[in-house]
Amino acid sequence: MGVFKRIFELALEQGIATADQVHRPERLPTDEEFLLVHDADYLRAFSDCSLDEERVRRIGFGAVTRTPTLVRRTKAEVAGTLLTARLALRHGLAVNTAGGTHHAFPTFGSGFCILNDLAVTTELLLAEGGVQRVLILDLDVHQGDGTAVCFQDRREVFTLSVHAASNFPARKQRSTLDLALPDNTADDAYLATVGSVLPDVLRNFKPDLVLYDAGVDPHVSDALGRLALTDAGLARRERLVLDTCLAFEIPVAGYVGGGYDEDLTVLAERHLHLHRAAAELWEAYGLGA
Ligand SMILES: [Zn+2]
Image 1 (cartoon, rainbow, N blue to C red):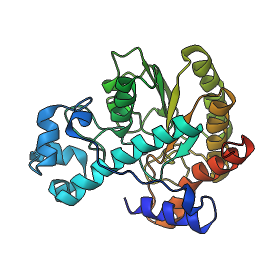
Image 2 (cartoon, rainbow, N blue to C red):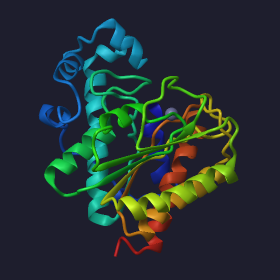
Image 3 (tube, rainbow, N blue to C red):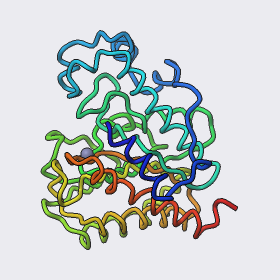
Image 4 (cartoon, rainbow, N blue to C red):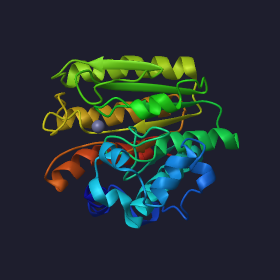
């Protein structure tokens, strides 16, 4: 999780974002807001630092899971995801320096995800009536299984997951549309897949908002990846996704998602392709005007 801070610092250092473009959530989400997605017993046990061993093991963070610091941090991440979505609705485009906890299910966490920020944000915005249809575009290399389950009976939400077929989770759930790629899929084949499916979904489903999980674990050097994208490929992907949404005049909120490398600066640079693409398109579309 140390990478989130590094992304934030480097974005400012490199002039990708300016200080006045930085927004911070004013409060944590309420229990009622989390309960739009999560089961009351699970939320209470996590919040009270009393999760059972089995559920702690499945999340993967170990003993730290049952500490007030991690509880607060986890809830703050959901608050940031919601704020990013609200900013996207207001301005057309916004990107977060965290977010994308797509393996969290309503009753348990999994794969380093505890509360599903994308699902809570989607349910809350739908409940408020500000949006009628939401596309959750998940390009993290791992299938967005928790998100898929959260919305399996909801016609208002389209879940699109492009992932490595052979990667975690072993047992895939059913998204609205799953595109499972073979090991070692490289830039051109990957971008052709995303570039052909995304416009069709935007045209046919007509979402009012896109939540984009821009996990960088499809990178060739990622410790958990199995795909073979280069840095140039990731940069093209982020530009392709954001530009396609903006060309359809559909607000898009981008989230960091997964990415695994021992060198946090190397990893942060991979994630910053998202923020750099957002900054360039912010100018190109005149969104700050
Ligand atoms: Zn991942």
